[in-house]
Length: 176
Image 1 (cartoon, one colour):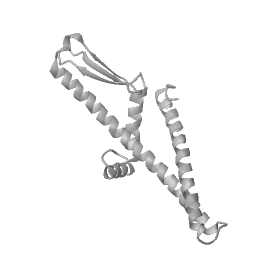
Image 2 (cartoon, helix red, strand yellow):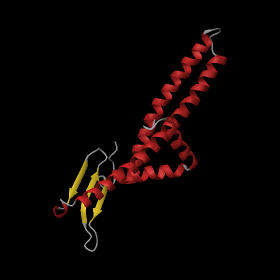
Image 3 (cartoon, rainbow, N blue to C red):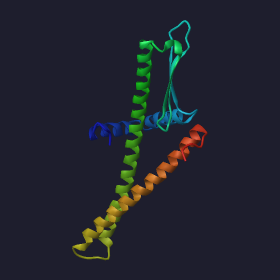
């Protein structure tokens, strides 16, 4: 669930359902940015006319963050603040893309799990070998067990699929 609560997660989910390709493209771009060429790069240029890179931050997928400043700009507070703001904007974009992906995947897993467990529960309740009061208990137990099993299997399958997909997007073998 989103850190801002269930309403925010619901808004994210509705946005994903309205524009299903948009979140995928955003998330794909983030993954390519992180896994291609060793990490995402945020650069701050000096003002014209002699534009050159004054500050660079490299954000690696394993969580390492490398920051470089040119020596002649080490004391430039305005440049430092501008660079800091640009890095913050990158993190805000990546958080939004990640939250959208998490909501979409959790929704897909929950829907598949709930659907399969409802079917199994109904089947056990209507055609099970047990009669009387034990039939609803069996239906709930079967439904809950299948729900958990489907969730576990789908998570593993999605993790493997996403790893291979990132490899394909970036042309690298870094996610195994």
